Image 1 (cartoon, one colour):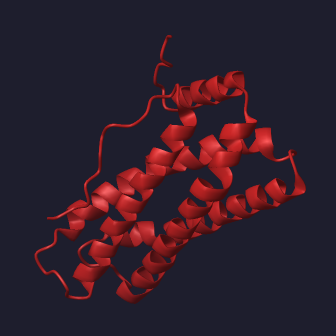
Image 2 (cartoon, one colour):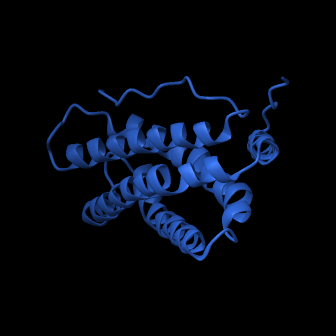
Amino acid sequence: MTNPVLSEELPGFDEPLALLRACHDKIIAHCEMIEQIVGALQGEDEDFDTRAAARQVMNYFSRSARQHHQDEEQDLFPLLIRQSLKLADLINSLKQEHRTLDELWQTMEPELRRMPEPSDPDAFIAAASAFCSLNREHVVRENSDFLPVARSSLSSQQIRDIGRAMAQRRGAPYPVS
C-alpha cells in the first residue's frame, strides 16, 4: 500500500498557529489517501489495501480533524470575528464549510467502514470527491486568507491561551517554557 508521506513531526502547542497549518497538510495527505481508495474502487489499483487506508482515514477525520475544527471554532474564531466585517464574513464562511465537511463525512464514514465493499460505491465516490475538493479549497483559504491575519492580530498571551486550550482538548501537556 502506498500512502502519502505523513510526517509525525509537528509544531508544539506553544506554536498553535503553526500547528494548525501543519494539520492542514495532514488533512490534504489524508484526502490523497481517500482519492487512492476511490481509485481502487474504480479499478485503478487492485492491490491497494482499501481496508487499511479506510481505517487510517477514519481514525484521522474522526479524531484529529474534528479537534482541529474545534480549535478553530472554539478558540481562534471568537477572538477575531469582531475585528472587521470582512473577517467576520470569512470566518462565517469557514464555519459553514466546516458544517458541509461534517455532513459529507457523515455520508462517507459508514461506507469507509464497509471497505473494500461499500454498499453504494457511486454515492461514496461522489461524497469523497466533494469532501476532498472542499477540504483543498478550505485549507487554501485558511492558510492564505485567515492564518496570516490571525498571526498579525493576536497577542502573545492570546496565542499561548489558544495553545493551552488545544493541548487540553487532546489531554496533552502544554510545554513549560
